[in-house]
Image (cartoon, rainbow, N blue to C red; front, top):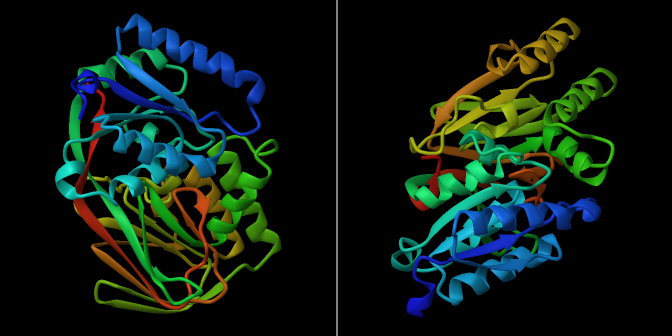
Length: 313
């Protein structure tokens, strides 16, 4: 590594899609805060979600030991998956930070990083308080029968919520907040009986029945696994059966109040491993982004303390 890069940040700026008119002003504000806090940095600009993977790999290969993602959950997901492809010894030398700037910033929010508090965020990152965090991992086969894996920071959704989150991404100019997105999903439940035949193994339980949605969270899971934390070596799982009408409105109220697990339609678990033996026609979302639906059974586990993450001081 070039000694000139020691302590220098590699910053990847990912502008929000559909917000090009304000993206330059947003970056100017971030750049001003970086300079005011006397941060040595180089930055690269992501033109699209598809370029994040390539640019993170470029920063790693050029020797940067502090990677700061100016983006949301999807960009962070790409970054950790790049890090998990390199040798553990090299990965242990790299720390990852975030300045929230995406449509969905739940992992940043978990640590109290906020979009409008840029100066405070940069001061926290500069303080360099590092915590080893866990990642969830889905192992599956693709349509060509190849064994694949993908890591996640926040959660995996199987079923209705993956469908809704995909819809939200496609119509993000209409749907604003996370709460609005999930309220829409609850409304859809009233008019459609969206259920999927699933066969799951969680701890000693076997679930073989119609299920509306499953959330497997390494972190709060967009409000569906609110007690999950990315540092206990465990995954929280919420299995949601189709509610009766009275339970539906109760569920809406409890979700808004942050008490999703109190709903009678939600069945919570805590585990190290989830086996999905069947999820008939159910879409799968990972950290808020729809992934290619796995072919056949797949397994979700947790890998403990594998990423160095910068947290508030």
